[in-house]
Image (cartoon, rainbow, N blue to C red; front, side, top):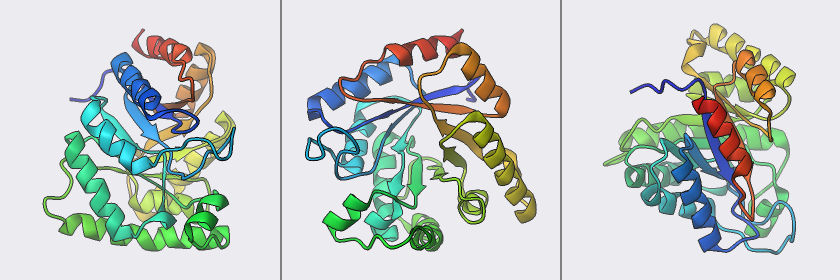
Length: 256
């Protein structure tokens, strides 16, 4: 059944500088609060704070959260295409989707955090190289998903995160059911219009692509501004010690 809520509220839980039990408590709390989606980023080292502090792997967490939550959607925000063979990634994602009962979103991105690449033996290269890797991987992922047995349990939409207007947003128009971005409202409006333009050029209905964005702490007025700009799915962030006060406030606005 389609949600009657005016917008969706998701949360990316930063899997760093904490214990696993603290992280599990955080996703359970978010789930109990009634978020529409729960996400983890896909990195191997902390992005801030102690560079050698605790950090947990994305897909292992997703497998655990898949059986430990009931939120309508879970997923990586986003998985770096360069870290896993595309066919293997499709198999991992389908298995997690089975564990979740069909709630997984396959979030994909080109990657940017050089330390992950260097320490794990991947070739970092230039940004254009990483984008090309994503472009080449997408058809492989979709083909492998179609051949897996049993395959995903649900629709397993593809989310692509990025803002490059010549390549990344074209990939969104070609392959994605959801698009994620960063930046200001004005930047979102411009990039969303480019997605629409690519859809028109490729003969796709732009309304098929759900618009999502990673946002900071917003007031009710700011939320309304984003909604008028066309944002459908707000993705907030919480980090250790995983205080959910601001998240709870936004959920009350959603439900009011």
